[in-house]
Length: 202
Image 1 (cartoon, rainbow, N blue to C red):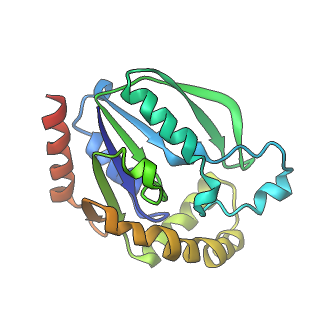
Image 2 (cartoon, helix red, strand yellow; image 1 turned 90 degrees about the horizontal axis):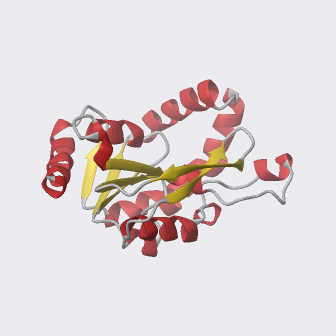
């Protein structure tokens, strides 16, 4: 199994890169795991308390479970991937049965910040985008998909996202094998990644 880690700041275009990589690959041979599914369970807190959690700090992620699940998949076993709700800021009681594939793509802002998880990746990718561009994308997404208002998104960006990006996310670029500048459609970098995958699954 080839495990590819795709990191980068919020709104950097990680999802777009994942889609571009998968476009020409057989769906049955590639699986995706999102770091967002692995936010820690917080059933002990009420909604207001959960709203105050810093979700951009490595402490918010259940890396232990994510690492355990990747190891299970590598051994050929199925896993029950958690399902997270951004509306309630908590894990739901649902899970997604995930089967091992020839290639597993793990994507998320903090996936290169954890040593044990990082060591499981065969290829480490960092998607880089200008900070203004990332803020605009984050605004659009959070308002359209997550029911946030503009002030809430901007406050969160200023007080949490930006400092966390500078402290924990941007430095992980140093661990990347490939850095994809996502200011434009970067076909060369995508083709390189796709070639590596095709070599492994052919």
